[in-house]
Length: 226
Image (cartoon, rainbow, N blue to C red; front, top):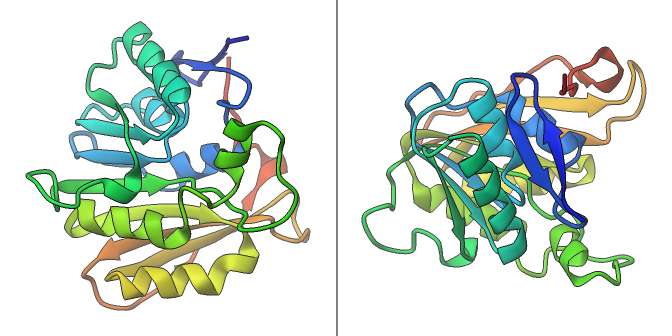
């Protein structure tokens, strides 16, 4: 059954079982945002929550919301229509094939990805939920590669992942010429073990990583709604 979540400034987000969003998506969308007219890309967009948060915050540049699951992409399209957010283009496609060639390659200013986190471990019996959580259709290399192909020189890419994958993420970004520039850990409360990190990288730039203050959930950093 579909439901609607309302963001801070009234944007309506259509969700469904297996095509919702969590705190990680909220943190990702707010850690770094495209400038007003920049061309943006939301990889693994699901119901379009990241693109819609950007819209809610005032972004009006062209934005592609790329999602493999057709039902989730349809929810994004419904939200786009209802919010008169025509600058967002839902695209049901495989990011592994995205920007391999053609005029869109190297033209995006900003990209984000909330990727699947798990390569192994228990799987949900729901194939849609399993695909969203496991890396069968989107590995770290797939996500980083898609961003690297899509971004222009100097373009920015923001990614969230579990802390045990930090070394792998930083190495993968640098290998793709996406230099890590900002990093923050998310914690439930001050002093608790971080459960997520968010990193922003920039294509073709010099090394220099800045550690940002923690994103503390109990402080309201991920809050949304009326």
